[in-house]
Image (tube, rainbow, N blue to C red):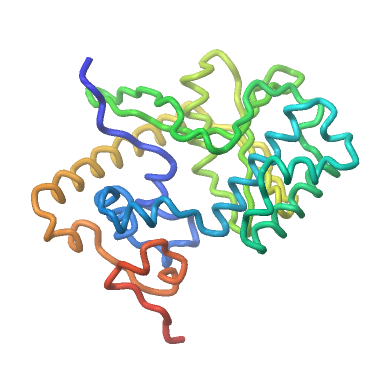
Amino acid sequence: MSKIWQFASYNLLSLFSPPVGQERHHCDMKRGFAKARKKEPQVKALLEQDNTPQRVGILAQKGVYEFHQDSMMLYRRDAVEKVAEILQLNQELAEVQQRVLLILKSYQSKPILLEKSIIKLSRGDEGFPEPILIKHGNYPFNFYAAIDCILIEPEGTLHILDFKTGKSDFDRRQAYLYLLAASYLYPQQKAIASFYNLENGKQSEPISATVDTLKAFQIELALIAKRHQEDLRRYRNNSADFTSIFPPHPGFSCSYCPFNSICKFSVSEVAA
């Protein structure tokens, strides 16, 4: 079988269309840098750097993972210090250290995975998950779904739990994509998904999906996989068309874009 180059993921979906309410922050040029120009030295260097929110998220996930590698860790008085040592937290920026320490303390006091039937718990730095091959009509593509944690509830329901940090709202589309993945990985099992913010303790309600909802998301993934490959093909054929293939949307969000140092459209301030 020939290698499947077409792919889709929540990350790609979010690069195409932001969550509801975040439309004014969307810039398609970010997808261009991240996907079409990712091998260029300057772009590659930026992609390999984790900003503060990313470091906090990665270390928080690792912290949860480490808490559950030893059945007695959560009960130790020095558990937070031990996990921080494993994470080499003292080598991080001061803000990262402060936020992650608070997360570790909060998790030890309220360990939501305690005594849960865990069948998968990600460390958070494993890289790309194994792709799920989806065939939409005659169009095959690889679907990537990086799942933080999978539990089995007492009544047998599969529960996909996604950990968050920071202040961002939960994006239900991500939950539906996890449930789409579960329909392929665990086809005989009823599944729900939810989000839990390790930093503020906020938890979403359990989210379920009908067969029609999952089918709609599968169709949307197939469409963005096709469009993305077409955009990449156009860029490879004529790199001078970069700005028309991946149009910029400069504004307030430029301040938070990882590519603002190399993007000629980036603005440092936006007039009120």
